[in-house]
Length: 85
Image (cartoon, rainbow, N blue to C red; front, side, top):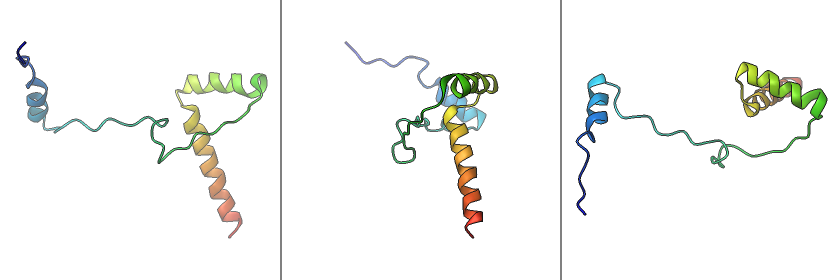
């Protein structure tokens, strides 16, 4: 069996060079795979009063749960630092 490259193998690179965008950006690592930056945690939420309505609200606004929690906790930590100064 011979190793033959497709006649279109260089097309993507040529189009990228022509557009001036350069090489493609490196693939983003998922939070679950980026152990140096992110830590997994567990929270227990009341299913009826909090969890179900939260899931609906997040889906309608297209926000990730982890991003909401991170933003809220970062804001809380920032406020704690100003109170302790």
